[in-house]
Figure: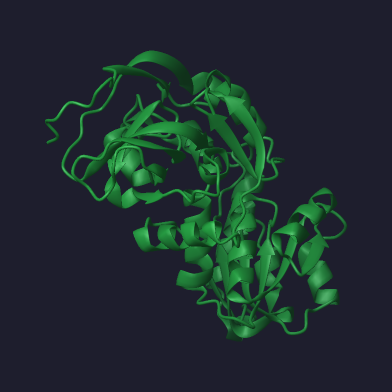
Length: 358
């Protein structure tokens, strides 16, 4: 345990706490007397400057029962801040860092990013590049590691290959485009027409507007040359069509990687959501000799790996990975920030500024 006192460290802090299951406006309470957590060996205390929201944050808030979530609990996973107690680790007080509190760690410790002070293992921190602000850097870990582990860890993407990123304007999709281009791959992506410039600025070589025609229909009628080595569904489609018809536009032995399926929570209890989920399951299980797809379907579930976060930090420092910020909200305006991300129309990261002096 850390025994040396840290000068001027308060005993309590402000934090948003999820106190019951429900939508953010039902679940969250802004508390001003949350204890600043003590440290165990290997843990670091960070003063949070900015935190980024993720869809998994409000989805878990909405569906996870209290027995699993161990409420009250501080939400969110990504942040940037300054080390205030390095606790005999490789870091030093004053270091500017990027931090990641994955879901399992959050459920174990109750820690989250929407707080003034967060404790976490030193292995979950990397030094922030000096040429990137806390507002820009805070959204890197979850979306970045998800995209990195999908394309590199699962897809084994290599230079010269061709990848299709469904949902290039999402946070995960944006990271995937940057990572693929940094590796020297060709990138085709999809989004609505209003986000075409955003996707092309991220590095996409070709763009498809999914609002004009269903993606699978467009790709069947206009198969890419060469066909895709990887299809990465960054928006967790439940509809099986993109996978079902992929023999027409993905190489034999290619791989279809998804971040889901996360059924629409509004329809999950109804027949539409369940029917699509069952249809997707049937397509995944159908063998190729019975008309199934000649490619593997797999789901990426992010597992924090310090080396992955370090590589992403390096790409950011080199200017090869640029996180676009959709909007910035004050610490007391978290409910409005959640309203924004829940529209599914945010282009880039929705950020909460914890430190008002930024």
